[in-house]
Length: 83
Image 1 (cartoon, one colour):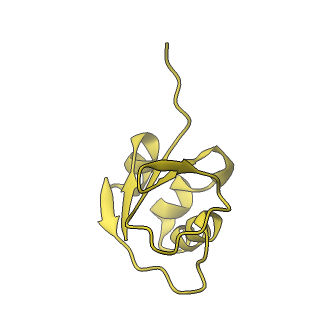
Image 2 (spheres, rainbow, N blue to C red):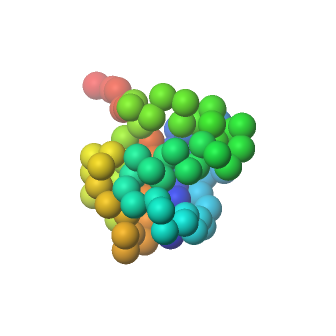
């Protein structure tokens, strides 16, 4: 699946996207963020406060307990502000 990172998540990781293949034990978004934090210091920094990170699977916003099976694209981004 393709992981896409936006805003400060992208800046902390140092890339805008990548192909990832999480193990079968990674069942939902929360598991995926935990798995990503183990990929290195930059990922650990990006996902140090996972509760603030919003997620979309195949361009649909989802909660952190959403299953990732069959996902083609998962996007991670911080809360948005603006006016």
